[in-house]
Length: 285
Image (cartoon, rainbow, N blue to C red; front, side, top):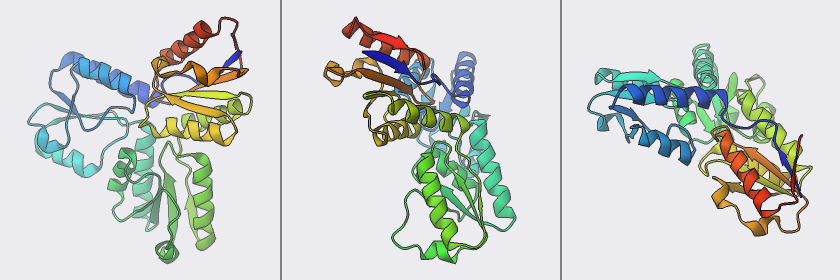
């Protein structure tokens, strides 16, 4: 058996920044709160909880202390509410997400109709939408496209972790209905690189192991891409989730990680495979 690892492993730079900020804040203070998990990775969430980071459902649940804004960002209305309540706010939004928030707001101020491509229930998308009231959020093509047909001077932005194939598909359909459509591909370059790497790797292997939180959009997309390229894909949160029978009789195994997955988890998966299959070897790609 040969084991091939995707070129990019470990945290993306946005998650790395947020993670380090969270560690620094909890080391100095005992009243640090976040609304929702810092990142979609249960191992990192547990570690930060052990350092004292507390989770709150809403600003109303925080009486005092610090509101730590996670990598996905928050709607401006939530931040205003926190400031009025006298909370200290530490903004650890991923710079790529902040860029999209500012871009969407600028485009709307220019009189453009904003379309956000992404999951309407994802915290990043909700944060972007909060900056552009009235924007249309789209994750799938609607059965009734009359709203899109009525829109004028459309500007499109996207969730940073959106599957690029879906982005291109939806953009093409929108552009076909509207004379003036501006498109801003705000998918994170790291996400694009991981998707390309997973796509290329999946074509070369029999089985793909994608490591990351099951609630992580970018990690799920890597598994979807791998399957689309013909590999058997298994999404795991760590080596403990592996099943030996997945690899019986397979010649090549690929390993890829999501943007919020620490690099040591990929090493642990690799080591587990080497324990199970002593004749296996890791091949550089």
